[in-house]
Image (cartoon, rainbow, N blue to C red; front, top):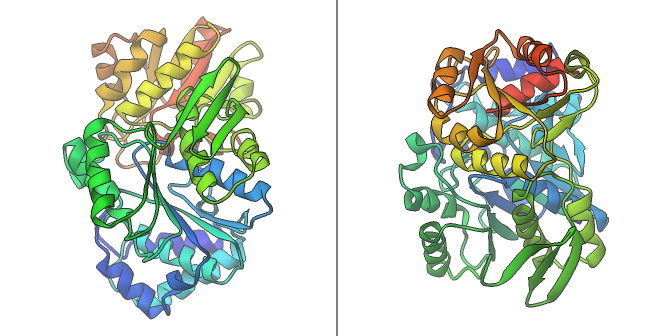
Amino acid sequence: MSHSDAILDRLMSLHPKVIDLSLDRMHRLLAALGNPERRIPPVIHIAGTNGKGSTQAMIRAGLQAGSCRVHAYTSPHLARFHERIRLAGDLIPETDLAATLEECEAANDGQPITFFEITTAAAFLAFSRTPADYTLLEVGLGGRLDATNVIDAPRLTVITPVSIDHTQYLGDTLPLIAGEKAGIIKRGVPVIIGPQQDEALRVIEAKASGLTAPVFAHGQHWMIARDRDGMVYQDDHGLWDLPLPNLIGPHQIQNAGTALAALRHLGATDAQARAAVTQAEWPARMQRLRHGPLVDLAGPQAELWLDGGHNPAGGEALAATLAAMPQRPTHLVCGMLNTKDIAGYLRPLAGHARSLTAIDIPGEPNTLPAETTAEVAASVGLDAAIAQDAAAAIKGIVDSDPKARILICGSLYLAGRVLRENG
């Protein structure tokens, strides 16, 4: 165990709840640290239900292609906590992470605070001490009461598509959830709005209007569409004729549009726009695994893919991606959290997969039991089975179908375990 891992384990015990949306504890700790959030480079703040990480990755690729130094904050991590904090483009070094976490732990002085809150404060502290041109800040959950929502005057806010998820925290209707996401909008600060359902868009636009925040919304102020083997982005400034995103799936075209709208507002060049869609990297978003023990287990004829989508909109995006891929027998290996709408996630996939093998998410107390996953999968029309773990599921699939396309899916927590297991 690394030094930072030991500190992170201690920080997990500072609050009885993993999620407790509030800004009071965050403001208290930041004040004790000297308010580092006021000394970080200009912030692009990103909220939404789906596409936040991919959109952030494309904005970062575009900015870095213009020789900008870019901080980035995202969650959750997949293999290592360090993935959450990038300092001027690079993952935070272990020594810096450990020292920053210890400083936040000391400043907190044992008072109640959630793990996400104190680690977000650590990110702000690290960002304040490393020179950069921009800070990309991804909301953890919701927006209005998220720990990242302590920036009074960001350079830009971005809201990616909003859909139903985390209803126990954000509300059980789309307008309620959209209202929470719109909580990142600040007075007079431009907001880029990705593709939205009408009832979500109305809420977001009303919030922006009340704060006199200029709106740049998909379908009104910018558009993007596939054009043969590429895509065309258009706004009042002109056209960008670009290749398809290197991130796989039709939904990535819309994520690219949101990223390009943000980059256009930041004055990006044609070369930066091209870099945004061709150089972005974002693991566990329809990622082809090509090396490692699990790939070896699948054998030379099979394909092994990984995706961390976990809500109904994610299931629809994944189904559209599979429909656009070359025909090949597809078999799912699925593990999900017990807080998710598993039927809503699996239903769109039923027409695109021959089978589903359900597994528990190893080491995750909130895993949905594999038996329950299999029962729900069968109820939506999937041929379902159960396996002990991902390796056993892969072996069972290739024993009966050596040329299978195997897609491990259902949770970013499962995706992280798979990436670690696969080296």
